Length: 328
Image (tube, rainbow, N blue to C red; front, side):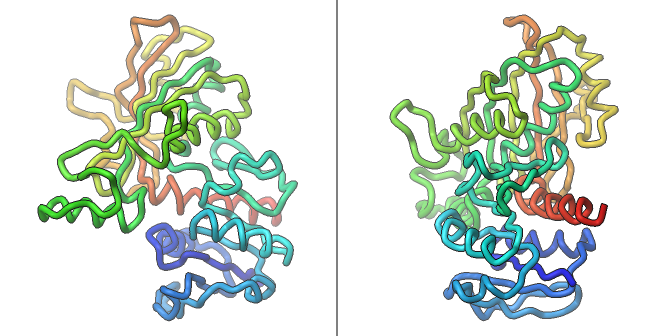
């Protein structure tokens, strides 16, 4: 008997988690859907059965769950994840609450595996997830010394509020979520600013990349930008390698890898786009070329659906990884 809870079930990522659980046919004998009191009472469907979403309380954490998919924000996770853990569940948390805790696994299944010193596993930042997968390919083949990210992040990364701000702008209305209009605009501001001028989102990408790849000394920098795209993130990556492969060799290692989809024929307008990756499970890589201004350095363009591989799908893949390990 496998008992699973989804916390934050009515949110964008929570709903995607339920969809992916069903699509991937994850073993689940009992499913319980939780939300805040504001959303309790809503009804959602899973495997042709209607479920009423319930309010999460401390008492409910002791109901014998095996796994908990948590997508309800950092403060909720900080309060409830340890309670689920104490009551025997393994929690896969989509917030940033535990990502840099040295006792907590930070997992992208194509890259690393949990060791479970704690029964809480952190799901990384959406842009980090899609970036470390091609970085792992490069690290294994050629060694990675440095990476510079520039992200082009969809408004759905801000949840329903971000999508609503984009629609408000289309209707000529002022934003309520972002500090500036996002419609017909790009905002180089995601999360709060620190004193050094970096945003929290940028620091997340820097620190999480090192932790996931196990490269504590890797040189990483980032600029994170919100763009007027509803769904799917783009990341421009400038990567310095230990070796100096040809562009053809780079394309070959990606083409032969099962974890990425190579789209790189610019003469025929073939390259990843955010619209092209929306709704798909893959990480797409293209526009591979040498950076002539630095030795052993290359440009890549990477896109992926931030609600799927960047959040819900990655969490469910972690769950499948746990189930497979247990059965093995």
